[in-house]
Length: 534
Image: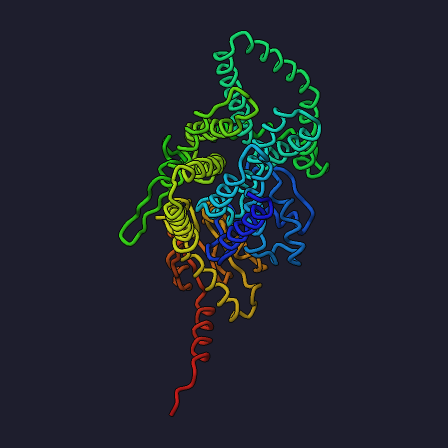
């Protein structure tokens, strides 16, 4: 394939990937994790203040990379931020995942890169979480960069390669401390594939293989100094981010201390506990109740499996030619590790899913060469694209926030947006406007994403239990979860109009509106009615 043709096709794929990610970007309500991240970024944006929290929120790259997007949008305060601005950050890195295929160089053919770009651009899960303001899309981008650059470093351990490898490792660690899983899986995969290559060579050449092993040992020795440079680059990049650009140097050490907390979370996952096959059950088959479509990525996974088998079958005696087998080993290793950890959220599978999508491209490009009839190749490719595109549409647009969607996890209900709209309507008739007093009484896990949606209201108080609030008065509005609402005195609630909204499928929120405010709201509705013609 000519370079110009490849470039044009890649640009077309990127355009399709961008369109899939930006179309109706504000359709899905903010997830509570997104709102948490937005609040943390708001502090950095307004006050230039960020301090790493080893107990939660992961690493700081998401916040620092969000700054240029906010500045370019002319948004300099937390209240001014929009969902589109924040999600543009993860969309950018979602497209970067596709472009990183270029770093594979000659390790993948042009056709394999193009099909990998198509699968990455249209993957229902990758598109879904590219439209999600959390660390995961950045994490996948830096993981793929690290995996590719590690191979390039082993093949050619020069200083030009090691700088980029160290930067990728630093960004990866500064995004999530649990990146040690990715690093471990990549290194183990490298050792396994290089070892298998040596064994195959030994079986063919006998004593000549031992000479090759000695040559490899010499190569390892020459790689020691570049490896030290890579480690220094890793430490420098991760230190800059975790120390908040040298303001809090202890943040870097805190990132290592945080690992103990994540180990405990993995061992005691609570309601995040899922079985070994959970991730693959999400990908393979999901069918909800009546009216729910079928969600399945079986065609892509079948091609990925074919790509894995093909990569190992074609394992070469020449170790430098085994990038596909290395990638296959990494995908399997990462999938095994993440599946073995009881703590599971659907976005954790994106790292090994991205690797499987590249392997699916390896398998599909080979499959197309086996089909001699051109029309049959076009029909097969068209059917695969239609199915993938349809699944992407179902996941991201049609069932964007509903439980039948396999990638929806503790998602804010669309019904919650009715509560937000009602508060805006009430503020428009209140004498205090957005300065009206609002009391929120709910446990922290049942409060978010309220702080995001109430960021433009000036007088909002938050309490975690009803015992902390003597009276709802003089608040014009109060928002309580169902459990805390039951603790209020019935006589007190009589002076409020109660309305009910779903925050999540298992969380009911009560909006208490003071009677005088409700009467003003009702009057405004009556006066807004058009006069009847005589």
